[in-house]
Length: 356
Image (cartoon, rainbow, N blue to C red):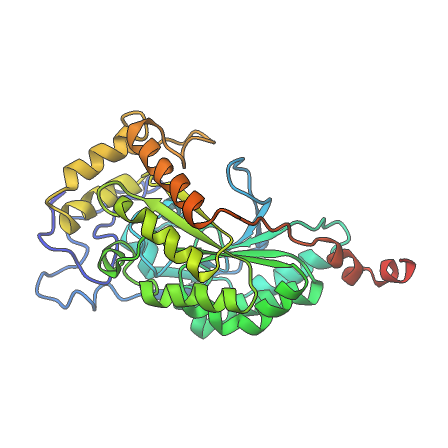
């Protein structure tokens, strides 16, 4: 595949690898059509409504907390180049590359499907994670408001929910989050893996800036929302040098805990990341890739549960030692929240409340 000579700003992936489910191989040499075009104008993000028949996904991975996840969008405008979820776009007929961040599917019927599920007497309360696959607060949420409608339903049913996001847009819904927190029904994980915005711009081009993300953590904590920091992923020779100051800053802002995940390049993400790192960091690209391989038994990915997100070997060990030391210094009293499931049954079945 011919390499584009410069990094295209505003996008994480620079290429569209072939969809493994396509019977026809496409020409992916130059996704952006013409080198003189404004890189910010191509490709334009497109949105398409889809109508799934169900909205909750059973979490089968033993190393992922919780039993259920809910994704109001498929594909993600944030464009994080390392995102493991890119491969899921292939099931919709798209590429895991530029398509993942420029071909976004919107599930406007998600609130109706959630209400129907929570209304069922067969449903057993268990925290539901927003999102798990793509960010529920990606930019299109500002217009669509699907995530806010979902939170309103969680509050109506007094059902616990966890949120993972990189976007300050979550502060728009602070009023609902405060209600949920007052009954121990919500926890937020803010994903932030560096304090350096110049790194963020390359790794996660359309996410909230680092100052805005830190402010998001600050405001959520001030409002009494339980917040964890998620340092994910840690990439050797790119952001691993910043673990100590990152944990220190998040601790000062009031997070309950900080957890780290090492980078793994599953499926098409290996090709996407490899192309990107040679353009974004040509001086160290080979070293970065070799270090990633050293954490996964000589490969860029390891899919073994319990091992895939921690990594192995000396580099991975050094990352976790730094994280452990940082938490001993700055978060000696980590907190773990157990969300309330009992209020859901009392809300769904008022007769239970009368009997108590």
